[in-house]
Image 1 (tube, rainbow, N blue to C red):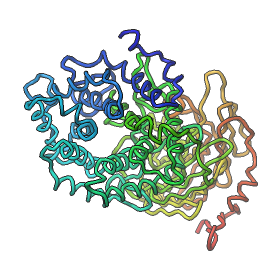
Image 2 (image 1 turned 90 degrees about the vertical axis):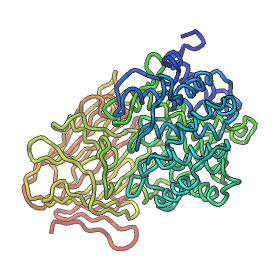
Image 3 (image 1 turned 180 degrees about the vertical axis):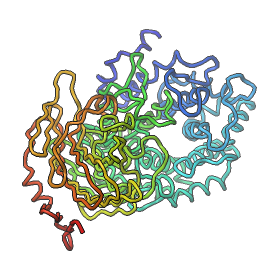
Image 4 (image 1 turned 120 degrees about the horizontal axis):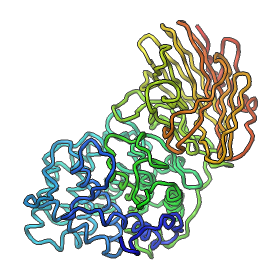
Length: 622
C-alpha cells in the first residue's frame, strides 16, 4: 500500500465531515485499504475473516459489489475515477461466463441476486461510465448476467426491490427489461405498507432498519429516477417517506447515535442511509429542510467514525460499536459491513445544490414521548442527556434469524446502553438477559420471549401476552418513561420456575470498575459512563449483579446487569420492578416521584396504572 493509500487510523475520526469534499475523502479513507485485496481478475474482493452461509466465492462478490454503493454516487456527483478502474474491470470479468473469475449463474433466492441491485442502480445513475465504454460482447455479458434476476425468485420482502433496481437500470440504458416483473414487485411491496409511512419487511415481518435503509431507500431512488415516467407512484413514495421521517427522526440522539434495534446492525452507518436517499430525492418539507437532513447524516457518520469499527489495516469489521461476531447474522461475511456505504448517496448531489450549500442544523424540538404503533414501539427521549429508549410490545410472529429474541423481543432498546445477545444457553451470565424476563425450569437453562399471543399500546402503557411453555402464561405491562420505567408481570405457571428480570446493561470501563450497591431488593450500578438500577416493587427476592460473558452487548464488550431473581411455585404470581437507566454522571434518585408521574400504585395484591384516557388498568392475582 502506498503512502497516499495507507489509512491513518485516526484520520477518519478526525475528518470534520462538513463539506462534500470531506465526505468524498471519507469514502476513500474507507475504500482505499481494500485496493490490495482484489483478486486476480478484479471481480472479487475476498476480505479475510469468518465465513457466511453462502461460501467464500459469493462472499468475494459481495465485498466487490458493496463498495459500489459509495463509488457510484461519488461518480454521479462528479467524483474522480481513482476508485472506478478496479470496479469496471471486475464487472467485465465477473459477468464473462468464459472467464475463470466469472461470478457464476444465479439460482433461486441466491445471494448473487442481492448484489445485482447496485449494478442496476449504476446503469441508471452513471450509464456513461458502466455502459458507454463497453463493446457489444461486454454489454451482452452484463445484460445476460443481470437478467438472471428475472428468472429467479427473491424472498418476499425488501428483496423484491432488487428486481426493480435491475430492471430500472435496463430501462434507463434502453435495454430489454421485464416490465411485468417490475410492476408485479412494486404492487407486492404495496401490500407491505402499514400506514403512516411504515412498511413491514414482508407480510407479518418486522418493522426495523430494513424499512429506512432498504424499502424507503430504493423507493426514493426510484422516485428520483422515474419521476417523469411514473409520477403518481413517485409522489406516493416521497409522501410516505416524509410521513415516515416524522417517526424515524425520534430514533436519533443529538450526538448522532441511533437506536440499536433489530437485525443487520453490522451495516452500522446505513442507519442514516434513509436521510441520504431523502436528500437525493429532494423530498424536502418545512420541517425536514436540507440543513436538518444534512445534520442527521453527518452527525451519525461522525459518531460512527469515533467507534473502533476498523481493524488495524483500516478495514470495516463485522460487529456494531466494536468487532463482534457474536451478534452477527448467518449472512454476514467480512464484506457485508460495506453496505453501510449506501449512506454516501448524498455524494451524487451537486455541491452547489441546497443540501451541500445550506448549513447543517441540529434536531428540531421533539416530544419526550412518541407512540409508534406500526413497529410496536413507544419511544422516550431525555432532553438533558440525549438518551433515546424504545419500549417494545414484541411481535405476534417470529423468524429464524440469529438472536431474534434479543433483537426484537426485549422490553426496551437504548441508544446509550444498547442491548445484549446470548453467548450460550447456560445461566444468567451466558444468557445476558438485559431488559428481558428469563424463565428457567430450575435447571439453569433460560427461556425468554420470542413471540406473543396478544399485544397492544395505550399511550405510554404497552401490553403483551406470551407463552414460554404451553402451561406458562405471562402477561406483561411496561410503563414507558426515562430515566425510570416500570415492568409488571402476571405469571400463571403449571411448573416450578426460576425467574430473573434484567435491567439495562451498564458498560464496564477499562480504568473504572462500576460501583455496585445493593439494599432491600434494589441494586444500583454506576460509573462515569452512566448508571443502571433495578428495584423490586413486589414479588421478587434480593437484587443480583449479573456480569455477562464478554462481547454480548453491542456497545460495550463488558457489562453488568442489575437483576431481580425469584423462584416461583406453580400458581399465579404478580411481579413488578422499577428500572432506571441514564447515561453520564448523576445520582439515581426520584423513584417515588417517577411512580406518581407514571400513574402507578402498588398494593399488596394489586397494581393500578392510571389510564391516560378512560378507566385505569388494574392488575391483580385472580
